[in-house]
View 1 (spheres, rainbow, N blue to C red):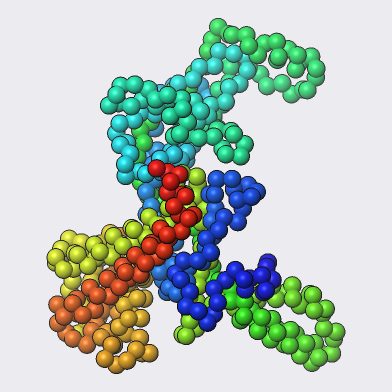
View 2: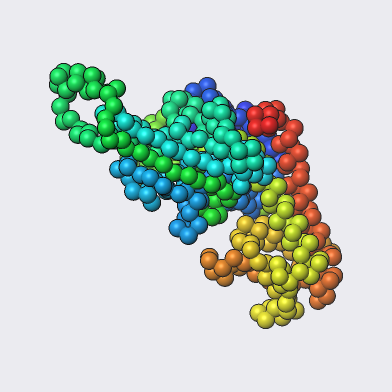
Length: 443
């Protein structure tokens, strides 16, 4: 773990109002991360509900291209002939876990491509079946894509150069040898290229689909999407001093020797330092270190940018449906639980939107630190009645009992302010060289 002085040089100053987005870096670019698939950066001056909303959308809402194999009735991987050791359902599952390298799913016509593997083994040795064996036919042109184009859909591992293994196709009369004798090895070398009368074959056809992690984790664009509270170096220094003083006092009272200062420093780094994070005037964390690692298809900062776009769409749809009184999407009724309050049932949404709106409208219109004339809400809360029910329910009570006034004075301007904040974060991202470079890589 870095020292306090080293951390201080990398983090925003406490006295300065930080930008929302700072210190984008690829910490492993000089070792294993040759293609900048893992990134870290700080997000500052935002509420933690915003950080969590972005994380949740990255995991569950950003679209990717893949193969749907579950449930069985919706399976798009048709195993036509399979002489491999794995049965058809396992094969379909393994193919479904393979990411299809399409960085812009909205521009990809999934109906125009058929993905095929048709391999024959006519030797006396096993043959590995990998993503290199895919052939892709474009229906609109009635031709198969060149090997170079297929490689763009299923590239090899950037470090090892290997393709993803699907299964193994053994020869018809192959018996694995349990010896490493020179005679056996020489015999295998001489028979490796000999053909046999009976062949083994593997043949499948598949259609791709566009989906996201909400359906199945196989469609998630990331291997890691997390954030932590960023340590404030100045608070950490104060915390270390307090920790050492406390340990010395405990040792004195217990009449035993205080551990060496190096040991105390190490213990503090391991068990206490993370508690001393940046906080706002209310004591809440307000600087977060994001850690994103893509599976390799969409660059990490682009994924982050798209997640913000999705959240903006959710908020704008929420406002639009309320204004248009679209009860199929947003149903508004008088609350039966809180006198003078309104109940808003939002279909096809979850805690991501619920917690984001609740937290920000509370901060803007219900917080007791606000001047009295700005406190336009007496109460706002939400619940998700059941994890499997695709809706959330808000309870909201304003100073006015008029629903139209509540929409005009609180809900619409409040959600618009959240959208403005998201726009600002996006604009800061778009102005960074790292994001520009990632966008160029997928054009």
